[in-house]
Length: 201
Image (cartoon, rainbow, N blue to C red; front, side, top):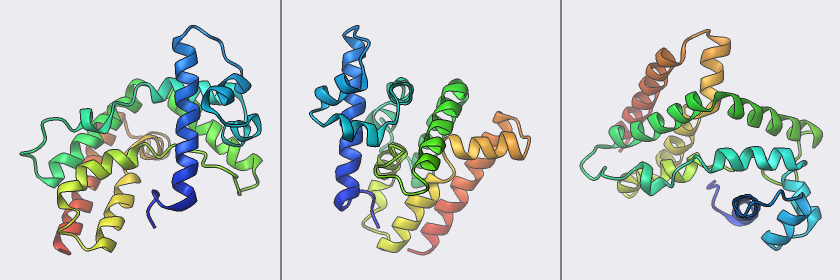
C-alpha cells in the first residue's frame, strides 16, 4: 500500500506543516512554544502534541529537515543515468548526510523510538516523516511504467530499508564496520535490489 494514500497522506501533510511552521518561526528569530507552532500551522495544540510530544523533539527534527535537499536537487542532471546510478545518488546523499550529522540523527532516532514506546506501540500520528520515500520515488520515476506495480512497490520499500540512519546504525553498532566500508555494503545492497527488480520486468 502506498504511503501516499488516504489518512496516512493527510497525517504526513499535517506533520510536514508543523515542521515548516516551526522552521519559519525559528528563521524569524522566534523561540517558539509548541502552541506557537500549532497556531502557525493552523492546527490545534492537541494535534501538535500527537505528532511531537515535546518541543525539543520537534526542533531536533527541524534542524535535520533543513539539511535534506529537495528530491529534484538531489537528482539533478541524472537524465542519462540508468536506474542503478539514479538510486545510488540517493543512497550516497543520505549516507553522507548521516555521516555528517550522526549525533543529531541518533538523537532523532531515539526520540522517535521513545514516542513509539510512550504510545504503547499504537501512535496516533506518524512518528517519522518518510522523507526518503519521495526522493526514491523520483529516482524510480522513469522506470515505474515498465515495472509491474507489485515489483515497483517492493523495490521502493526495500530500498528504503538500506538508505538512511537505520542501516548505518546496524553496520556501525552491530557489525562494528566503519562508515566508509558500510557505504560500500549498502551500495552493494542497492545494486542487488535494483538488479533483482529489473530481472522481473
